[in-house]
Image (cartoon, rainbow, N blue to C red):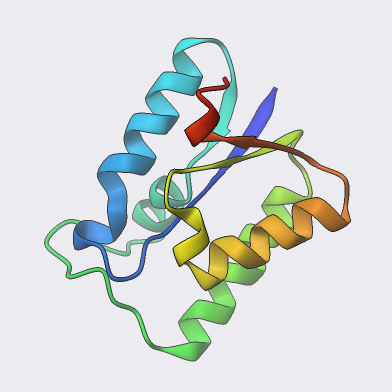
Length: 112
């Protein structure tokens, strides 16, 4: 199954890379194809480590959300990392998944 990871990045040290990387590792470990937005940011040259987890630039946020929604539309499921509801971007991704009837998996449920 192709799964996109969604969760809170802003306001968390290193943009919550640890939680995203752990979820990606667990899901890949059981055979899923995982899209980790932290990996995408790293590939685009955006440093996540050593950062305070704040990005208030609206143009950058539009870029990331536009990219992410396109990728989510190509997936089989959206995996909501614990605490996702604290993020406006993750809530938007969740609403998109609901509207397009994409399978949603919640980390809190322990489901893989």
